[in-house]
Amino acid sequence: MRPFNVVMIMGAAAAALAGCATPPPQGNLTGEYLSGRFAVRQNSVHVPPSADARAHADAPQQVTILRDAFFFHLASGDAPSAAAYARRLLAIGEDADDGLARITVAADLLKRGQYKPARAALNGPIDAQFLKSVAFLIDVWIEAAVSGPESALLMIENPSPDVYAGFNDLHRGLLAERADDDETARAAYQAAVLGLGGPIARTAYSAYLERSGDAEGARHFYALLAGDPGPNRRLAERGLARLEQGRPSTAFADT
Figure (spheres, rainbow, N blue to C red):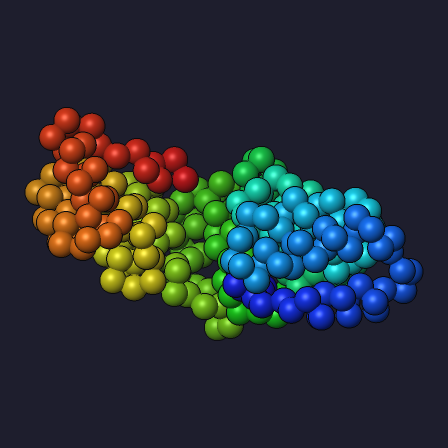
């Protein structure tokens, strides 16, 4: 999966268009394609989706443009559109997908409650370790939906050796909270905060402390975050305000 700040020089874009088996119209298509590439260079991740969508409409046979339309819709947070483009990629064949399209379709099916099709969508080779990790976590949540959070907790404890487990603590905490296993949830959230959970883990852990009735623990955690001049301080301020109002956070309560 390409990083959001990938640099695409104008010459490479032109070479990509020149290499097409059927030369596309040189008016609108070229302009849309190049405007999307320029936006990528500027890290404007919300611009390429519309440009790539228009380019794909003009040249639906070009797999490269379809991949871009899929990827940048996903990167910009437009999951429904990304899932639609992902299905088009999968219709072409496995060679058009590195695994990200199948993962996107599986996540879309999971959200719709179509658990068996979601699990089936994950079948197939996935080479990138990060994508394997995401696919594993999606499968864990499918297991939670089908067999309950207790079964999913057993599954998340046994990832295959080629799956990177750095993000599993956060999901273990979310699952344990659903299973009313407070001891496991607390330990997992704390491990996520100290590990690679980032702002999501801090938000989830603080919300868990509020919901579990541990106001003292929540205040202590917010006191640690309050010294940060950035988003951590704002998280602490909002959390302390909720505690004063007796209105615990609902963040991640219905994952």
